[in-house]
Image 1: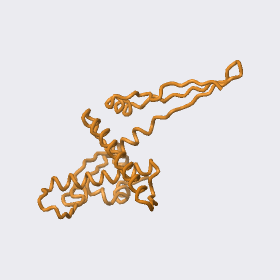
Image 2 (image 1 turned 120 degrees about the vertical axis):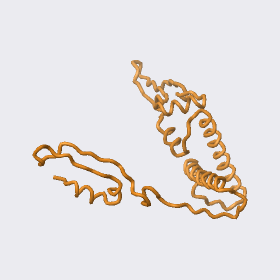
Image 3 (image 1 turned 45 degrees about the vertical axis):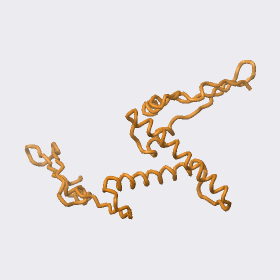
Length: 188
């Protein structure tokens, strides 16, 4: 049997922010209800989780502009990291300048495409970080079903799966076909 004290000791960090009460039956031997309320303790990690300290040589910027620039840079790094992995551009082992230039060009071009897509989505009320957009976009698959025909040939039907509602909303916001590639039938 788990006792309330055992639960509170198992959740030592967070338990200070909750008031938990077991309601007993008339005999006082069995619990019939549990009542709880959240009461965050002031000056704790829950109410004051941490402090960012950003240092810059831009003395003319206000705190809002500094924060926006910092967030933009962390987002840019995350998108670059993701795209470079997906495009096979990591790790970088270029030793010739024209290859480095090509690498940078493809990376910046891919980032610009991501930003265009995100701006179009934001204009239509879809606000998401690249990672969550990528996760949403990754669920749709293109599948092939093969059927043996009576004449001995094999029919292959290639088509995209139906998009999940969140993905369908992205396609609609970007004015894209929710079933990309259409249906292709081939006989072998």
